[in-house]
Amino acid sequence: MPESATETPGAGITAQAPAPAAKATRGAISIRNVTKIYDPEGVNVMAVDDCSLEIAAGEVCMIVGPSGCGKTTLLNAIAGFHSITFGEIYLDGQLLCGPEKPLADQGADRVVVFQNGALFPWKTLLQNVAYGPIVQETMGKAEALEKAADMLAEAGLADMAKKFPGEVSSGMARRAEIVRALINDPKVLLLDEPYRAMDALTKSIMHEALLEMYDRTKVTMFFITHDLEEAIFLGDRVVVLTTRPAKTKKIVDVKIPRPRDYRLLGSEEFRLLVSEAKGAVHEEAIKAFEAGERELA
Image (cartoon, rainbow, N blue to C red; front, side, top):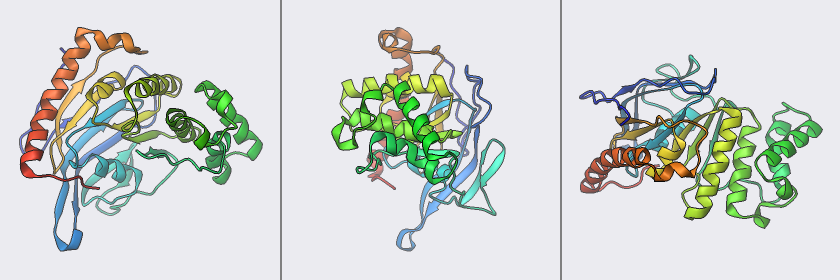
């Protein structure tokens, strides 16, 4: 049974990241004693409370917890969409946000893939993928289109490149959206339940496609999900957050070698890891239900 971190009363866990198998040298995230307090209509709502987490460069870190517990709040703070109230967040040792700078600058080094698709419906998949480098002027148009075509081909979408988002399946569109994020060569990919609305078969195909992309890029991933099997299958670690206000409750280390495929889903090791994570999540889900929690943006 993989070892997991233990709780520190009153202060959550400072989770030490394992050394990932990939030799990634960038994308390390340090979340240090972060607190976030919203003030809707003058009523303070604490979404995150003294949360600390260390994510190694090249790690796939899966974040789970009850609805409304503060998972997306943390993601938005890293991305630069929401400010933090206390604490600090660093990327590769450089301060993103802290006491003197509560809101991180947004940048191409951190790219977000949201629950709902964000492809431009009037552009082809090829044009969508090439759009970022062209607009940011990091590549010329011809270079960006060539790079986009190569990356779509690597993702198994060569035949779909000239089709519009409405002409392809939701799974293909979501795969193209992740390719669009990766063409910018980000340090961190921030994923907020990207496969939530997909059926089980489509989701399994998307998992394999994402792992293939990860094996090529070794990009750090901060991945929010409610699906514990997804979390174990994809992740190097699964971080279970408490019900609101969020702090780290438990760390489940997933010491399953990469590359991975679906044969491991039937293994005893996989079953035990899912059970370990489920026990921690279930405890927090009961607390959230009893408290009458609702989804918090």
